Length: 172
Image 1 (cartoon, helix red, strand yellow):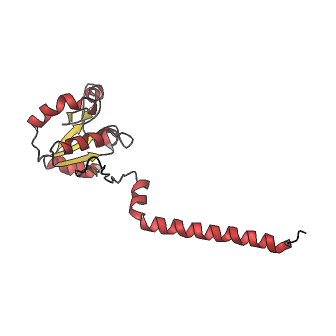
Image 2 (image 1 turned 120 degrees about the horizontal axis):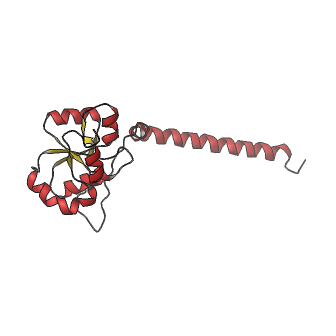
Image 3 (image 1 turned 45 degrees about the horizontal axis):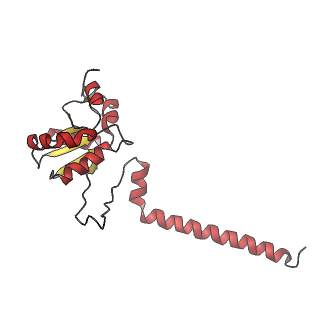
């Protein structure tokens, strides 16, 4: 046995145990403080946190996410669905009643859209589901351009189609 014998081995084990206990306590505190965010992440929802750049001190607004049941209620109340996907995808199939406003052509189409749609109308943007950021990015642009009530249906076209709800397009 070495000079330190069993005492050195016991001290090493004790140190590892203390590190494990402190790590577990930190994880428990972190999960407790961020419970809502963690549960949203596990259910596929996102939580937008505005970041304001020092070079752009104006308020940054993000569109709020909505789920399919909320979208259906909003449509009854007169909301406008906006398909942020590419024109070809829209032509093939889209949510019934949606208008096409692809993120890729927003610069060319924004003035026309602003002339046709009231700034206070509820807008619900969607694209190709949870992995698609186009509807969120389009929502930010619409908010920056004066539209007051912009929401994002994160489940998008795939969730709507898979639920068997009405769709339109050439592929139908």
